[in-house]
Length: 295
Image 1: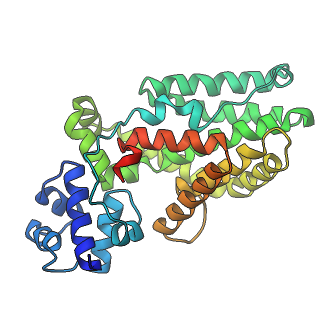
Image 2: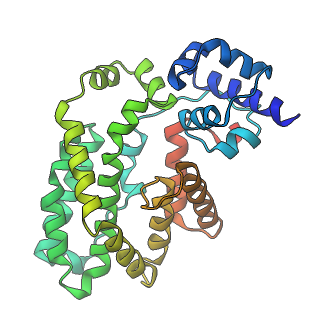
């Protein structure tokens, strides 16, 4: 199979796997649907910008679209609740008897846990615990004996907030996974079509606050603390990889590069038995509906 044939086949297989028509894919990346037909037969090769657009639409890297063989890809059913259902696995809440003796840590942990429970019920009001949770964790961090637990939970909390701040951008772009969800889930369609105007405003404000704060520097310090911990070194390695896998790392590199780095880091961690990376990969598979033998 030539490179052109592989690309044509991959575009077609991905489109069918997500249950899209040629017109729907064309509308999503702003080109005419007859061009999609030409791409899928190999009569024409997409421009570099179009290749990037298709890869982003299907949540893969350009390299995967160009060089991986998706011939055996089966139908993909996106589970939009998988992340919320498995928050405890993706962003584990850490506590110890010693940490819970600290009043500030205990209150922060309670706010944090309540936020998780709300998100599991598809209720995003939990993000309004932001100030309370951050303030209480920071106060608890004054106790040197529990700084590792504080760092672990603060990273989890800040990663989740950072992930949330990108939601309005994802909604605007409406990748294939989101479009499939809207087709199958009436509640999701109604929610997205009637998005609370304050949602985008709140997300932008939170993103601006994170950008203007010492967020990135603080994350690095906390990651370093975990990596040198006898109890939480594996968690520190995992959170470093997750920054790239979720593209919430602050750098000037393109999205596709960060995602590729994150995927390779997760793969390496799984190969050496990191339990957090293994749980993350399982959740990713649940979210995408892709089984291991699908690729």
